[in-house]
Structure formats: structure tokens, C-alpha cells
Image (cartoon, rainbow, N blue to C red; front, side, top):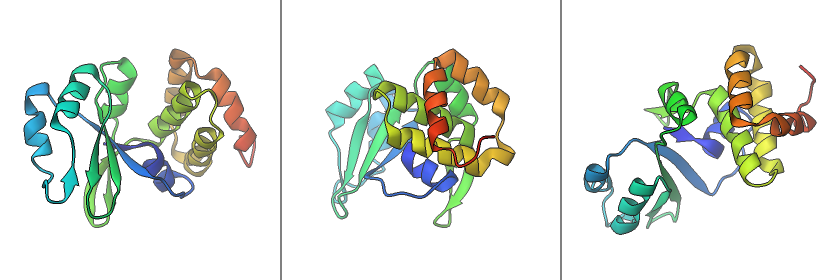
Length: 168
């Protein structure tokens, strides 16, 4: 599932990003098969780092040798929120390919969570506000409110309000 800045640019206001974040459900014994889909002539990755990341739930990278682009691979977490947002992923067409992306609600929540974890990143709050404003008519606000409370994101939600063009 594509997530964070790339997806918030699709659902909110487009902006440049330096990486692509993908959440994957990969079992430890299947990491070689997963990485085998990326030709070593075109991509660089460290198999040992990837195996360790899958075991610990940390992120690992795949780098394009031709463009220098970086893909951050995040193993699917076991928290209730991680499981919920993965189940709620949506299919969109991107460059003539069907891809799974996080829902707008989960994009907002992840941006607020990243803001919390980074100590209050305005960039994350701004992205969340833009998605909120542009998707307002289709958002499940009760779902957002539930997870704001469960994840302790009340402060980040209030701070996001500074970036809203209107006061819904």
C-alpha cells in the first residue's frame, strides 16, 4: 500500500517528495522472493538489512540505480491502527496501473502521527490539512475522531487547524 507524502500529494496538495513509502505484508521467510522482483541490475538493497527490518518491524530501503529514487519499505505493523488502515486501503489507477493506497482518513491520521513523532512537523500538519480540506465531502469523520482519540492526536489535530483555509 502506498502511503504518506506521495499519497497525500494525490489526495491533497501536490508537493515534491524524496522517497516513496510502501507498507507491505511480507513474512520473514518470503523476503527473498519479494526482493527477487527487483533486478539487481536496476536496484540496490541489502538483504540482511531487509530481513532484520521484517523481524523488528523497522523500515528498509530499495534504491533505483538509474534514477537514484528511494523506496522506503515499511513492514505491516501489528497494532490495531496499522491493521485497520491496511484493511481500508483503496485501489486507484496511477500511470495506467492499479495500485493500493491508504484511504484519505488514514493518510490524515498518519500525517498527524508523523507530526507527533517528529515533535510537531509543520510539513506533516500542512499535508494533513490539505487532504482534509480537499476530501472533506467524502471523509468518514467518525473514523478519524475515533483514531485521534485512540492515538492521542488531539494536540496535532488542533495544530492542523492553523493550516485550514476554512473552519469546518
